[in-house]
Figure 1 (cartoon, rainbow, N blue to C red):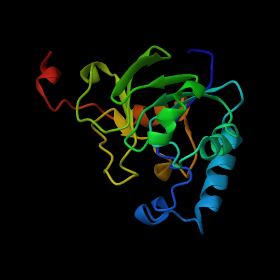
Figure 2 (cartoon, rainbow, N blue to C red):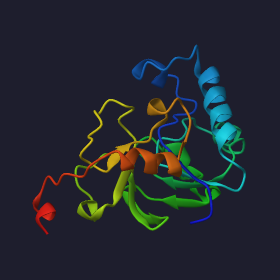
Figure 3 (cartoon, rainbow, N blue to C red):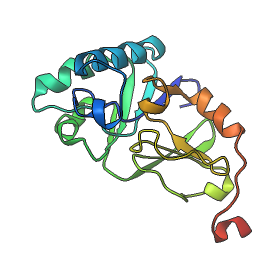
Figure 4 (cartoon, helix red, strand yellow):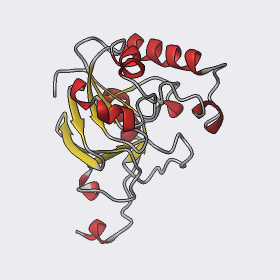
Length: 185
């Protein structure tokens, strides 16, 4: 996917009223939250750009609940299933790519990247400079300056997807320190 603008996000929780109190989100109600996240998303993501969404996309019970959000978002969404994606699973064929729960490994601009809804302490090739991006924690895990991983969820990034360029800038300020035997290779 070199030459394409790439964005990463997680935990939008569209239509999920309880997330407002669970995560102390600064919105009056779920409508304001949905509209703000959609506006923020579309303000940075172009129609033909790619968005990796690392789970917990949208709550609801019907096709309409999903479609009212999905079809308003710019970009081609590559989706990695999270723990709150029952509705999303029903409409998985609408995504550019859909990946079952677990980790998804890819290459972006020559860098190995492990994408997962959950945080991991180690991942494939972490000792060789591979990145790990995750969500789920809503900014509650402290960032580790010695690990090439961090939370890309909307709660950590002003309710807006983060660009691949910004991911690389953040990672460039970190210094990998091994926590297991792989650092001895």
